[in-house]
Length: 154
Image (tube, rainbow, N blue to C red; front, top):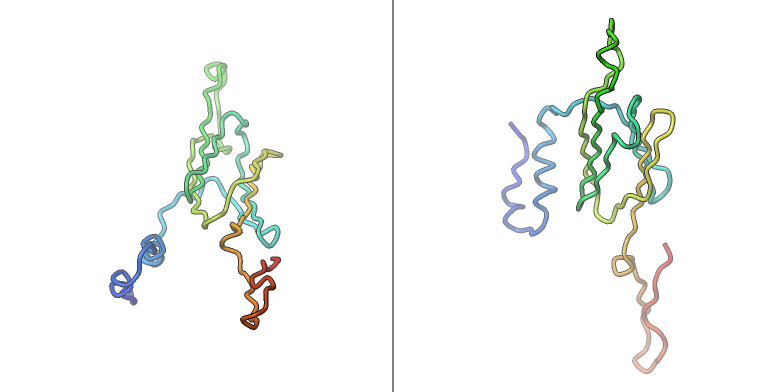
């Protein structure tokens, strides 16, 4: 049972459906798989990095897709040709397929992806459009002909 009723907010807001759905689902137990493990780091004011442990996967076995505000990373291991010749006595290295999804905030884009030492690094950057950056508006006398609006450097 949740403690907050969002019904009044649904009636008076437009475009916040995704936010309210996330808030609704926060109290529910998460059933997302724990494989592969990952870190999310903030590397700068507007830059982020997702690092995923994908040991045993080659670059051509991994797929990264950014669509709208979602980032999907898929990995599918190809069958080895000489697998019939070997007998595995203990399997401790996972080679199962996986799919991991991340929700991205508005204006966050994937800049780069690299695979090194069994870690997949995905670099993200938040690029706010000029129209959404804060502007400073000066107050002047009615007869002044100077520039009244100037962009604030972020």
